[in-house]
Structure formats: C-alpha cells, structure tokens
Length: 158
Image 1 (cartoon, rainbow, N blue to C red):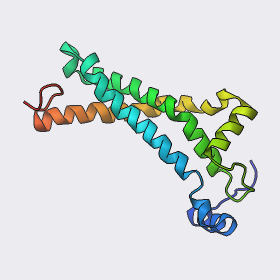
Image 2 (image 1 turned 180 degrees about the vertical axis):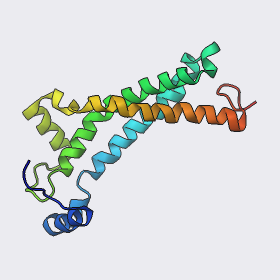
Image 3 (image 1 turned 90 degrees about the vertical axis):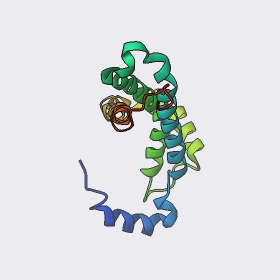
C-alpha cells in the first residue's frame, strides 16, 4: 500500500481537529446512533419475541437451540442494519478531505446512485462469524438467569 495517513490515536485526533475542527470528530455520529438503534432493537426485540414461540417443549431448556435462534437473529439484525453501517463508515472515512456528503441521506443516495444497492452490503459476510459472539451473549444470559435466579421465560420467575 501507500503511506499511512495516521500514526496512532493521538495523531488521528490532531490531524482531524486541525483539518475539520471538532465537528470532524463527530462525522457519522447521527447515522451511527440510528444504526445502533435498528441493530439492537431487532437483536433484543426479535429474540425476546421469537423465543417463546420457537423454543417450546424440549427446546426451551436447550442452550444449543437458544444459541441457534440467537445466531439467526444476530445475523438478521446485522444484515438489516448493515447499509446504515456502510454509510457511517463512508462518512467517517472522509476526514481530512473535502466533504463528500452533505448528510447521511445524501451519502446513502450517492452510494446507491454511483455504486448500486449491492455496495451497501460489501463486507456483510464477515458479520456471520461475529454473530457467534452475539448469539453466545443471548443464550448465555438466558442460561445464567436459570442458574442464578431459577428464572425461565414464560414462568413469571416462578
């Protein structure tokens, strides 16, 4: 590759503040918040909604079944929110350069127009491996609740 743009975290701050001011540190912040809300809303909302419907009978106590459901939901939430993450990354990568995008919506529109819808999902495949951690958190939390509190969903804690 070429020469490095930054040489550490302090250098990132110095150069960004020098070229873009304090606003440069927050480029992509709004779309980042929207992406987090979409991702976490789907992640927790779908898991808690589907768990009592899908994990019934013998599956209710199965860590593997909880993990599999969590993995599917984590992947779904990741794919659904990935375009927002792409826009966020693109906006953040313009630090130190002329501003390419007027807003998150402008960035989204330009990416669609110039590169097509597929470009919003470039790199989404890597999230499939990362979803293992998200699934582990959901299934592990459920198992921990049973161990510590004897609590199962649908039982009201009894």
